[in-house]
Picture 1 (cartoon, rainbow, N blue to C red):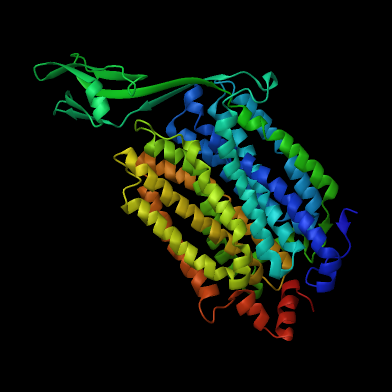
Picture 2 (tube, rainbow, N blue to C red; picture 1 turned 60 degrees about the horizontal axis):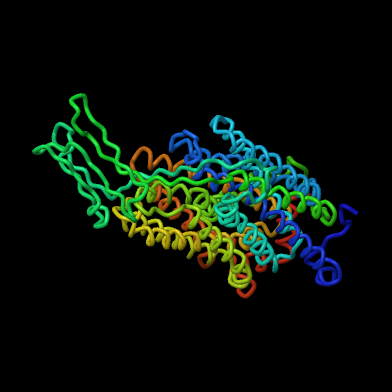
Length: 549
């Protein structure tokens, strides 16, 4: 039977005899599928940092756009997905959305092997990979419907937290699996990987005419190997003798019409073979397995709803739904929008901000750590917010996000002068991921409580807010890339996002956290606004919601 005839998770007897087993089975299967949805959603951010080294000639901003476009697509698709579960049910929606993601994985795996593939083609494929983020707005409403309110924070925290591991998994697996012919000849041959880094360890002095008058190597080992040939005050040539630390380095000189040197660049070149397509094809069998399991074992439930048109009643004035929809949207962009945005932008930030130093870090060696921490804390803190209430967690973690952003700005980590600052940059970014992950766990407790009078609207709210937050990778990546391109650093972005966080923090405090707040949530231990209403007040809100006589 595809659709269950009865579903009453708040009935303790029903939950004990029937509901619990079905709900946790559904959570396990949809979580397994969600992991690989997130992997396919963020696979472009893992691949794009390798594309320049195998021969693609796109601009820095074009690479940022490739990392951003899956987020744009997922936001649009989540707005659609947010309507599906209450109307169509869990089984068909999750099953179909899982198997369809095979298409962009295969297409991207083939396209990445041809350096003649256009940027526009990659943008189309990148848009399709956004399907992996779009269906999140079906997963969360499904889970909220299957569980009683007292367990929703736990269940959705586990699901979203483990699902987020897909982001860290794809960024962790990619550098390993592209290093050898893991999938055999059927997946295609290797690409020639040539990494060229312009070192920032060289200081060049020029006169008023733009002619180089001095070249100083900042590192002792590089200075010892650097030979400067002069003719009086004029530098004629710069040579770097080969040593253990200067191997594969070369000097590039720019000269004017008179033959005088106007610029000096030292580059480090690394060559090897990689199989970048492996990072795409590896997810195909997992998607197929997830589809089969979901199609066989998932079930759908019926909840009070008014069809697709009724889903948009969260934008009406009934029970002040519009106000709280706005509030929840802002706070969810602050939590999950930030998490997904930083996860998509982190690899390119490492490459762009710290990639020019000698010994620059591999972005994918660190990028997976942020999503891993955020996903883990998201899964672990659900029960805490069931007890304490979601609004308190959202309040303090949003303040933590502001502190992290300001530390990056005023600590100089966005405009580094040496590779020594990289460790501090990573630690602060990981702290921000910790805060966004914890914040995200708190929202899953909070939103169903805000709309406690209607399980259908609580589920739809999770889908709706998730849709707007899914634009996070697009907004964060494109805005960070734009700031770096136009202003030379990401400082304007982090200042701006701190102001946005402050606004979000105020909204959450005023409506949900302060004493006497309109729809407070102090957890299972302290009670909620809904618990304090009389039975007649609850029935009136439900009557207004359904427009019953």
